[in-house]
Image (cartoon, rainbow, N blue to C red; front, side):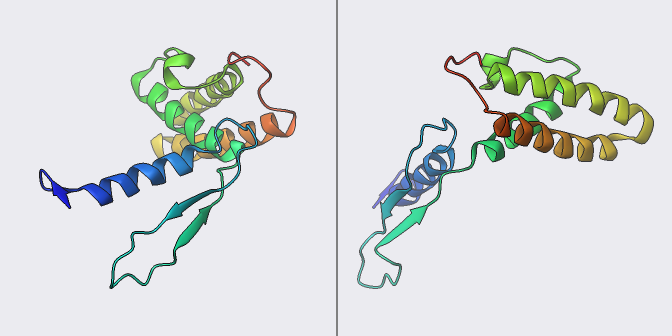
Length: 139
C-alpha cells in the first residue's frame, strides 16, 4: 500500500529500525526487541528478527563525537539538555572539544576529527566503566 508516493511499510520499518537502535540509550536493562517481517507469497525473510540494544558507551561515543564536531565547527558549546546529553556526557564533550581545538590549530582539521573519535570513545568507555549516570537526568 502506498500513500503519497511513499511506501507505508518501508517508512514504518525505517522508523522501527531507528527505535531499535536507540533502545539501549537509557541503560534500563531493556531486552532485545522482536519485529515481524511482512508476510507475502514471495517473501523468504525469516518471520522474526532480534536486535541487540546498543551498549551505552557506544551511544555515548556517537553522541559526544557528533556534538563535539558541531561545537568545534560553530565555536560554541550550547546547552547539554538540548543536545540530549547528560551532565557526565557533556563533561566529556567539553574536554574533547578543548583538545580538538588545540589539535586543529597544530595539525589541522583531519587530525582534530580523528582526535574527537578517539577521545569521545575513551571518555565514554571510562565513564560507563566507572558507573555511568546516576539517578537523575543531570548525572
